[in-house]
Image (tube, rainbow, N blue to C red; front, side, top):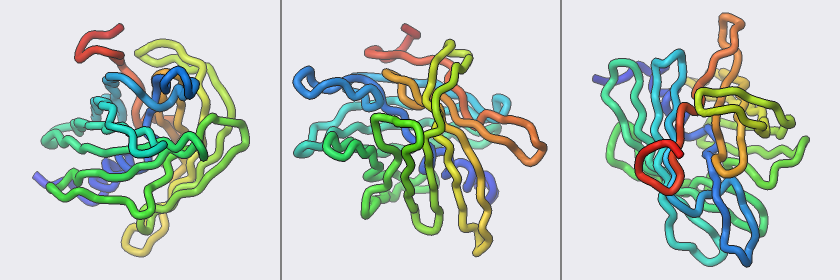
Length: 220
């Protein structure tokens, strides 16, 4: 079954535009980088009132020069549609603090996309007021670090950095901006994404249900 255009854009937005969650530490000699994983990590999300579920599995890749790399496999289930698994690679540059996406498989085929230049996701460490811009084809994302909040989710209560994103999708030559808020915590990275819908109510695009560190199953 093929999803509608709106559903496909929504799924692609979650996959390509969400700032990808990184956690863990670098080697002791290089100091901590809490948003880039250097060990096994699995995270489970739900969103849209339980209509969507996402399972993210992290796998560390060999370093490439000074770049640290990770592979993330996402299995997405959306209402009654067949589940999709998308595999992407990301890298972190300690010199610039940039976290970028390098490649991604397609959720509607076997093609592997390579981003040239790599697609900027965010910069760390987070500082209030910092901002960056990225463009994926005709879609543009402007992000700004808003500050910190205390956030209660099914996985626990966290003090999280908030990044406000203004996303502009180019859908058949019509601009459709959307405001989203991403929430990040040390050692887990992104734990939630939300925004206001057309009905004026706050909706979670996704929120963290549970996580496992250093093991294939079971909550720590």
